[in-house]
Length: 580
Image (tube, rainbow, N blue to C red; front, side, top):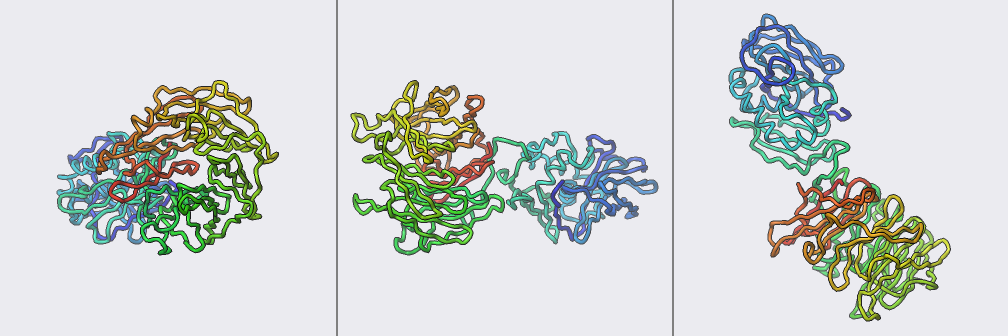
């Protein structure tokens, strides 16, 4: 009940029906007048608020709620049925309805049910109309909002009007998470996510009721502790998506996406493919193009230094590569160039050590360098004991070492025959080989992620065919072990022949594949999660998954969710947040 539930009500509104009894089953026969009680709440208790009982003859009685929103009033002398309203301040009136004595809770759903039952008429004088439609209105609300009610654990037989209500129960927690707003003229209702502002539901309130709109389930935030669900991201103001994969980093509050200059209008100075997204506010911001690098994600790498996005890569004139970079500061929305003195002729790798960015290796060289943004200087990495030159290898930062495995081997008899790797320690500027005993066969394009217990998971890759297998490397004792493939995704060539995106969270490896057949508007979704602690594969939910291709998509771990952003065949873009 931490949030204030805001609801704007100006016009007179009809109340909801409440049954006799305290635990469900709304009754509609006139009952002997005695005592009426209930709780007035909107995601917080409506304490010290005036509750007025309006009977069918327009007679009234009023009482004041307790600090916890509860009330009790003797209704002897009044004639059923009753409209109940609570006044919680200027412009804030909620209604409920009861056929007799018993429980009559007053909350946003009781109010919406009453408004629907009376079809927008004056609720305080529409007792008989409400009584005739109340059962149907309750059923419609429960059907329309079944997803959010289930998500918050509200029992299927729960009646917002007459069931026992307490602060902190399942329905009360739902009211913490949503904001219900009635238009000042009483003609429409909007339900939004009270944290993100995303619209969950909107509808007109007409003679046929208030449940004629469409629910956007993806904008509902599940309660704390809920797992395996998708949430929508805002797309208004989002950057356009291009087939050239963007670079992306997480700053702690924002996802920064960079993908170079405008490919449609070269030289225009536009940067339509880049932007910053804040999941908390569900908002996008543009990125300055002044002094920005002319790099895109296919030929560059990026890291977050704690204050800046550091980008390094190559631009090509024919077959000649020119290497350059820049640092983006979101606090000032500005770019600064990266020194090219002693810089490496590669963009492979790209890990942040806590003080430096490491890039290493190419098809023709086993050289690399470390970049320090505070001094704007490059330091060459030793090549002594370094692995042979390669690209498209799997890599991870363990906290003390840069670990690499596999990759292209253009000079070998098999282009993908690299079944070797190495470990680089920047503190000592030394390389150590990685054992090949029980290790993976040679491959390019494997994904590698660090687990929370400092192991490296290596998955998939290509050796002439796409592979569906994985290993776990333990840097502590320089050993490999095979991970389970039971329930694992099929090989890339069968399931993911259109490209997939993967991400590590520290506790899981998540693989997501979304594609359309023949570039249609119908998507096929496949998702898998490998839990490091248990060694078990499981599928992930596809409900409310974003309509975006996983091929060349962005996947960024925020610490609690995976931010996905990608393109669709109709040249639009989409994205979502996945909570493991």
